[in-house]
Image 1 (cartoon, one colour):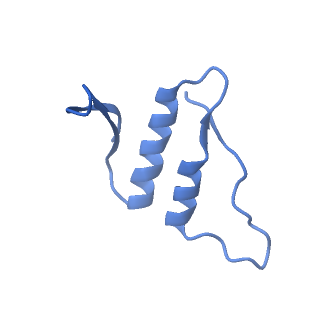
Image 2 (cartoon, one colour):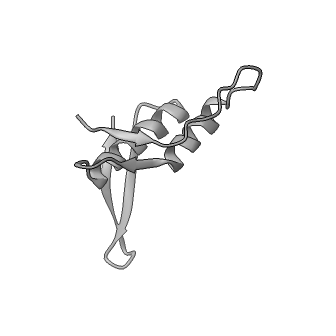
Image 3 (spheres, helix red, strand yellow):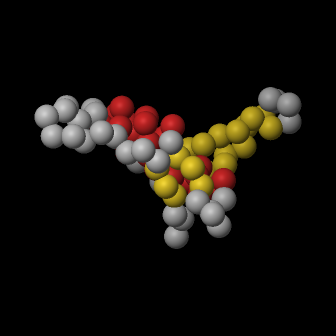
Length: 79
């Protein structure tokens, strides 16, 4: 089980409009950080899940350029 934290959650003060779902997901992505004992793969996994949920799709991935930008490698695939 991967454990991640999201720092400074959105302001949900009564009377303030909550963030639209897409903006809330974008904010969560920007604030993803590994917790002690978790690795970068855990962050990639959570980022792919957040992206899939925000876009309303069943599958999303995190891809990295390798070989001096000549190829892509899948770092995580959420399905």
